[in-house]
Each structure stands twice: as C-alpha cells, then as structure tokens.
Image (cartoon, rainbow, N blue to C red; front, side, top):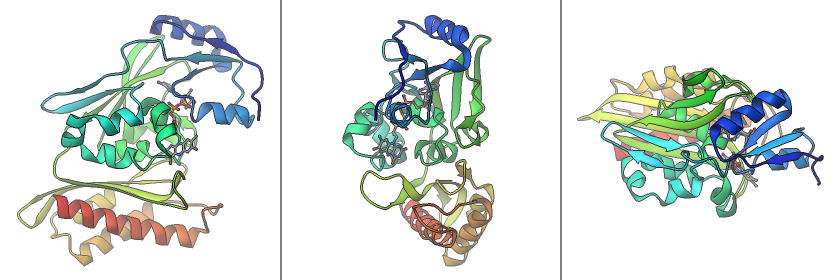
Length: 284
Ligand SMILES: Cc1cc2nc3c(=O)[nH]c(=O)nc-3n(C[C@H](O)[C@H](O)[C@H](O)COP(=O)(O)OP(=O)(O)OC[C@H]3O[C@@H](n4cnc5c(N)ncnc54)[C@H](O)[C@@H]3O)c2cc1C
C-alpha cells in the first residue's frame, strides 16, 4: 500500500516542531519511529498532509536513573530499553514487557514516546506505565505540563495530549518488589489478546502494595485499583488471587474481534493475571 502524498519535515529543535504544528493544526502529525503511524498512513487510516520527523530533535534520547526515579526520553527505542543494563537491574519489568513487543526490527525503531502517545489499546507500554504510576511530560505552545499515565487515556487513539503538544519524556517512580509482565498473543510479533503488568511489595508473607494494569481488554489500558487492593494485606493465596481476578474482570470491557469472543478474552485475562501475580509474588 502507498500512502497519500505528504510534505515531510525534519526540524532540528522543538521550537521548529511546535511552529509547524501551530501552522498546520490537525493536518500535521509528529513521527517518532514511524512503526505505528506509517502503516496507518499506508492503509489510509491516517491522513497526514504534513509529517514532522522527530529524529533530529535532540534531548529526547536519554535514560536517566537516580535514587527515586527513572526518566526515559520519548525517542528512546524499545531496543534501548532492553539493552540498558542499569534499567534491567532497577526496573526489569520494562525490558520484560519490551521483549514481548513485536520483533527486533520493530523494536529497533519503535519508541517509548510513540508507543504511549499513540493511544492504541493494543500497545503494551500504556498499561505498563499505568502499573508503574508513570508521568508523561508534554510540551506545547503554552509550555510544559505533566499528565499521569493513569489519567492520560480517554478512548482509542484519544488521549489527554492536545494535537499541538509533543510528548518529551516519561518519568517513573523507582519501582520496588516483585514484577511481571505477562502477555498472551496469537503468534510471535502479535499484539496482545490480553496482557497484565503487576508490581508487588511484601513484608514477610504479607503483601504491602500491589499495582495491576491490563492491556487490550478495553478501548484504553485499564489500571485496576480494585484488583490491586484485593491483594494488599493478604498472603497472595489462591483466594486473594481469585478476588483480584474478579475485581479486574469488573474493570475491563473487551469486545469481540479476530482475537476471539468476549467470554474467551475474559478467560484469557484471568489466566494471564493469575500467572503475572504468581510470578511477581515469587520475585517480591
Ligand atoms: C508488525 C508490528 C507489530 C507490532 N506489535 C506491537 C506489539 O505487540 N506491542 C506494541 O506495543 N506495539 C507493537 N507495534 C507498534 C510498535 O511498537 C510501534 O513502533 C509503537 O507503538 C509506536 O512507536 P513509534 O515510535 O513507531 O511511533 P510512530 O509510529 O512514529 O507514532 C505513533 C503515534 O504516536 C504519535 N507520536 C509519536 N511520538 C510522539 C511524541 N513524542 N509526542 C507526541 N506524539 C507522538 C504519532 O504522531 C503517531 O500518532 C507493532 C508494530 C508493527 C509494525
């Protein structure tokens, strides 16, 4: 498939990006790795007369780790997440999830910023970032603002980011305890039928905190506060896991599609969450 004709821009700084966005409004769109946007343009599902490539805009390609937080530039690729040794030690759930995205070719190009800004319910990083209680920083004509990942998603491809704003970085409070990213897909390289991100802390045999978010089971990622709360104060035994799964099932809203009917998706979501909680608990 060949996309409709478009003008291509490769600005050197953010001021130039914002000025092109301001000039062309809805007709302009930024591109990061292009591995979601270009296929949409080829399929004529996205019409982008003015395409702004972010590759030459500096300042968005670093990963910084300090005592209490991790800051990931929007242009950091999924492959860089996987290869970053310190990140693998401090927040291994990031590479565990990134390794389950597509294939190496896509991961060399696909960025963290593009994955979370896209608003595709099938993307793995939005739910992951909700689990980690991340904050997204965006810059626009009125300056910079922060938006919590848990508040960012409004509907499929609709987010709290305005069209004239660019996502610049993701900030994650330093995670602690056990973690797991569990994903069920039809084949290697596929988007999730269901995926679960879980972080758990414990004191002795008691769960002291839990965070659970689900992917591709609604038109937005689902951070399930009720499922998380169902584990806290328990020994994460079978009854507590069942309570968490029941709570999660009350929060998701899957629809029938080529990944299966609603009953199947609910079943898979339960199995995936059970596996993720069990693995996270064993690592806590
Ligand atoms: C075959 C294939 C399989 C895939 N499988 C998976 C999968 O299993 N899981 C998964 O999560 N993803 C999957 N993807 C998507 C892939 O991870 C994408 O690369 C990623 O979702 C988008 O990142 P990108 O950098 O390519 O963004 P782009 O395609 O460049 O942009 C995507 C959207 O985000 C916007 N955008 C990008 N960067 C910014 C920014 N900094 N600020 C504001 N808006 C921005 C763009 O305007 C566009 O609307 C797959 C892709 C392919 C081609």
